[in-house]
Structure formats: C-alpha cells, structure tokens
Image 1 (cartoon, rainbow, N blue to C red):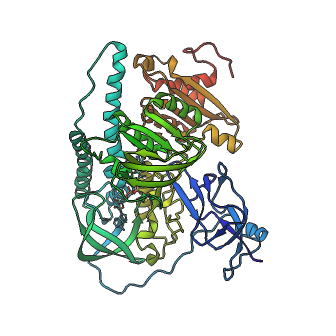
Image 2: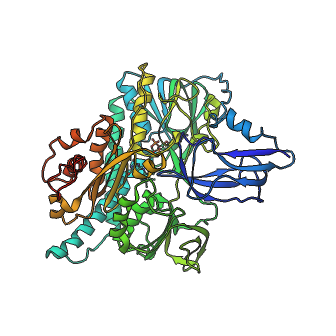
Image 3: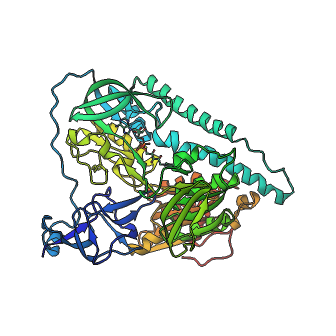
Length: 597
Ligand code: FAD
C-alpha cells in the first residue's frame, strides 16, 4: 500500500490560512486536480487541488481550522500507477514546508530584438507602473508592457478607484438621508445612473491619463501588447489595440524586447466558480462596477457570493441605490481577517441592507431562468428552496496570473496556483527577474504592490533594498469603514501572543458625536512584554484614512506613551488614537476614571 500526503502548495508564504471548505472525506476517491479544500486569506479564496489520485485514508483539516504552506491536508492511498510518496513521518521531517515550485529550464533565444532596456516591467498596474517610474527615476532605460489601453491595472481601472468613486456617492446619499434626524430634509434623490457611471469613468480617466503623462515625462516607453517571456532576457509582445480596459485585440504584429532586468507585475484575475453559468445577470466585480440595468432599472434583489471586502463594498453601493441584498459566505462571519468586535459594529449599522446573511453556507447550484437567477444553498443558514435574484455578484476571490506570461521560458518558478515566489528583494529564482504585487501572494492589495515595486526598482538600479514592512493594513471602505493592521485579537489568541488592549469608544469623541456617527471605536493592541504597539483596528467613518497613523506607530516601535503624548488636533476622529493610547496608560480624561496600569 502506498500512502501519499497531499499538502498545501506554495501559497505565497502565507501561514495559518483559514480553511473555509473541505471537499473530501475518508473513503472518497480523488483524481488529480480535484479540489481538496478551499483556503481564504483577507482578500482571496483559493481552491487547493489534489496533486495525486487515490482513495482518501485520512483528512487532516477541518472547516474553521488553519493551515500553512506545506501542511498536510489529507493522506491518500495512491491509485494504481501513481508515484509513491515517502512515508509520512519521513516526509514531515525532510520537508516541513513545501519547497518552492520547481525551477524550469530557461528557453534559449537566438532571434533579434526590436529594442533593449535596462528594465522591462510586465504589467502596468499599481505595482508595475510604480516599479517602472522608480526605475526611470534611478536613471534606468525602462519600458512597461501592458496589454490594455490604460495604465493603472485592476486598481485604477476596475478595482480600488472606481469602487471608491461609487462608494463616495453612496456615502453622500446615506449621509443626506441621516440629516433628516437633525431636521434637514431633502426629497429622495433622483439618480441618473448614466451620469453616475460617467462620473466614475471620468475619475478613472483623470488618473489613468495622469499616469500616461507621468510615464512620458519620465521617458518610460509604454508597449501596448500581451507579453510573454521567450528566454531569460527576452519578452515577445503581441501588440494589441482596444479602447477599453479588459479588452485587448491582437493586431497581428509583434515586437521582441531584450532586457537586463525584468519585473513581473501581471497581477491577478477574478476566480470563476465552475458551476456558475454565463449570463449577463451574473457578474464579477468588474460587471458590478458597470451598474448594468435591466429594463432601465438596477436589480431589485441581488445575491453576493462571498462576504469579503470587495463584495460588501459593491453591495453597499447597490443597496444605497435601492437594491435589496443577500450574502452567502462559507465562513462563520463576514469580512474575515478583521476582529469580530469591529465587524459587529458594521453589521449592526448595515443590517437594514440585507434580507438574508447566510454564513456557514455555500452556494451549490445556480440556474439562469428568464425571470431571474435561481440559486440553491447548503449549510447552516441555507433556505430550503432555491432563491430568485435579479443579479448575482460573484466575489469569491482572485487568482494570480503567474502562469499566463511564459515565466517558465525565463526559468522562473511558478507555483501550481500561479504565484511566483520571491525573496525579500522581490527577486525570483532568476536573480535579474523580479516579481511584485498580486502575483507574489497575499494580501492582494495595491499599497503592497506599490511598495514591492519600489523595492524591485531599487534593486534593478544596483541598490540593496528589501521589502521589510512590519505590517500591511487592510480596509473595508464600507459605511462605516473597518480598518485593521498588524496583530489582531484573533491572531494574538491563535498565536498565543500576550497582549494589552486599549479601546476608545467614539461615543466619547466630540467629533464623532458632532458628526452624528459615534457608533465606532478605536482599538490599540500592545505587546504585553515590550509595551510596544503591534496592532490596531478602527471602525467608523473615515477609519481607512486614519489607520495609517497606527501603521506608522508600529513601524516606529512606539509604545502607548509615544502615541498618547503626541498632541492630536481636537476635535478630530484621529484624536481617538491618542485617546486609546491614554486608555492603555490609564490616564484618559475623556472617559470615566480608569484603573492605572
Ligand atoms: P494588477 O492591478 O492586476 O495589474 C496587472 C496588470 O498587468 C494588468 O493591467 C494586466 O492587464 C497586465 N498584464 C497581465 N498579464 C500581462 C501580459 N502577459 N502582458 C501585458 N500585460 C499584462 N486594493 C487596495 O489596496 N485597496 C482597495 O480599495 C482595493 N479595492 C479593490 C476593489 C476591487 C473591485 C478589486 C477587484 C480589487 C481591489 N483591490 C484593492 C486590489 C487591487 O486592485 C490589487 O491588489 C492591485 O491592483 C494589484 O496590483 P498589481 O500591480 O499586482 O496588478
């Protein structure tokens, strides 16, 4: 009998990732590529496929558990003809963590090139353009290869920026509605969706146009086309033309570019769930941003599949514009990653938007009928009957594009899932080829991509730069906003980190009360041994704008005294950070008397 351990492959170095679904049980027969489990980090879910076929003898994980790269998911008895694995104990000792994806042999290239650069950046998203601009600023001859019409990637074109343009309008509408309680009454707004869409496009255009101008000013060449490595020093570009993001028609022309250094910044794409049919009423985040109307109206009833940040932000927009929401999430709560006390405040304030919040529940079937999309669920909160929706938003995570750019031809190792492993200098296994942004792993966030891009560029210029950020903040730009950074209470509990926590309720903040929005709070988390701040969270209006101060405090190794004795302007919401530090010191005079620590 040959037993094989099926392990978590390269998931970008992430540790203790949530297991949100287990698709196998003892006795099941699995084939190669069958999904074993679904894992979730703060912004993406990923299915882990079987790398060998056989009969499941033991499942080592459970829903709600945690697992890291290299962790054993299940032990199977190999199907006849399958390669035998070493016995489990030996395998554990020899490889506690799965080694990097195997490095392929770079292809040889003997053709001529049309141009030569010090640095070629493949992909013009926030990571890519930041790397390219920094490389050019360092005096390097630089080009960006981007398949779509504009720079800015997902973030500027179909992600961070358009979603915030819509969220801003939704927030103003909601705020105006709240004013009625203060005696200021407006009639219900008349919403011209075409104009709203045009506003969003204008915002995108302003930013992407600005990037084009800045590229020109830096003499960064933009090569419009789909690039693929053909060797460790050449990229072949199939030139494209199009006027829209996410559309690229190949012109039939090609260019070959030689490079001394390359930066792979190809980003990620939406994860499509295999059982979901093609139908214009079923959209991903890009489709949701289009504010599609049916019969001149936005959907009356929408299902969001996936209770993460992207789905909830889009849900906020639609709900404010009049759509009723349901959300289905396989985990036991929405907005995973943030501490539950923060999320609870958001939940209370947003309960009115939802008819049904289905946690611990999964979508099992989706059928497109003429009168709507019918969806069946399984799990704790699953309705008995299929539910009818006018629109379904699939926001179940994003997958990296590492396998779609010929990286193997350059000798760059790409994991099964499409992630590219890098060291702290953003170098891949091929030392003059770097990788940054969503393609190198979680969290898939623009600010991480930008910082990694700067590190890669500095290294291309011969400096020694490292990505050694202590923390990367996460923000849900919902209403109220939820922001967190560093060690959360959940992480502290899981990792047995002794902490001291201090909370300042916004119910005691003059500014929050004056704004009529005092539901939030600010929480700081200090290492109990060193007294230094190691984490923090905020829920409330503009929390995302303020979390940066906590990030800085963590980077600077501040303790409560540093923060509490820093004079914050009054009356501001940001003041709540100083006051939370005073709470930690037991000296906050804006709250009832406290026990001194
Ligand atoms: P991308 O932005 O994905 O850019 C990669 C670029 O490479 C693309 O333009 C693509 O066309 C190009 N490309 C890929 N392959 C090739 C090839 N072979 N040849 C040529 N070009 C190629 N993050 C935040 O930090 N804050 C937010 O508020 C936020 N909101 C979001 C909202 C939504 C709806 C979505 C979908 C995402 C959001 N994100 C947010 C995530 C953020 O957009 C990504 O983390 C960020 O864009 C990643 O940047 P990147 O440079 O790695 O890649």
